Length: 199
Image (cartoon, rainbow, N blue to C red; front, top):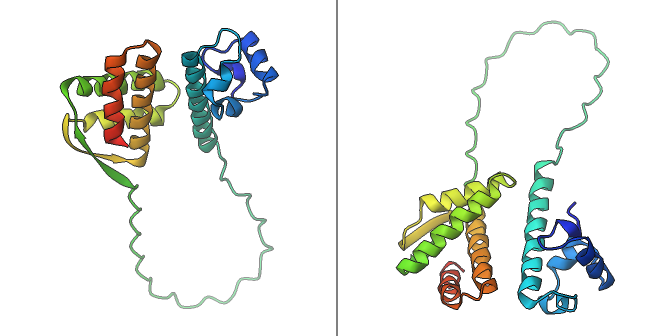
C-alpha cells in the first residue's frame, strides 16, 4: 500500500500538512480538487495538479500489483476412504475428446488519427518516455506502450486493446501536464489536440 510520501513531490513535512487538511491516504489525494491543495504552504496550482496525477498513478500501480498477487490456489479436498475394488468391467470404447473452445479475444478499439507533424513527434516522445518510466515497475503497462508504438502512424486508424488505449491516454496526459507545468502553451495546445483525437 502506497504512503503519502511515495507521491512525487511529497516529503515528510508536506505529508504532515496534507494530513492536517484531512488527506490521510494516497486515495484521498488522488480524489482531491487541486485548488484545495494550494492551501498548503509553497504548493502552487501546477504542483497541486502534479500531486493529484502522481497519486492516481500510484493507485493504478497498486491495483496492478494486487491483481498479480491474488492467490487462486484451492485447498486440496481430503482423500476419501478407499472402497473395495469392484469386479472389472469391459473397457468402454474411448470417447473422442471435445474440441477446446477458443479463448475470447480482448476488447479492441479503432482510433482514427490525423496528426500534424509536431503532434506526431509529441505523441511518439510521450509513448517512449512512458515506456522508459514504466518498464522497471509496471511491465504490463510498459508493454502496452510498445504495442501502441508498433502500430503508430501520423494518419490512419490505430487498432488497440483496452489496456493499450489506457496506456495511450496516460502517456498523453502526462505529457500535457509536463508542458502545462513548464508553461509551454504552444506544445500544450498540440497535446490537447491529440487528446481530443484519442478520446
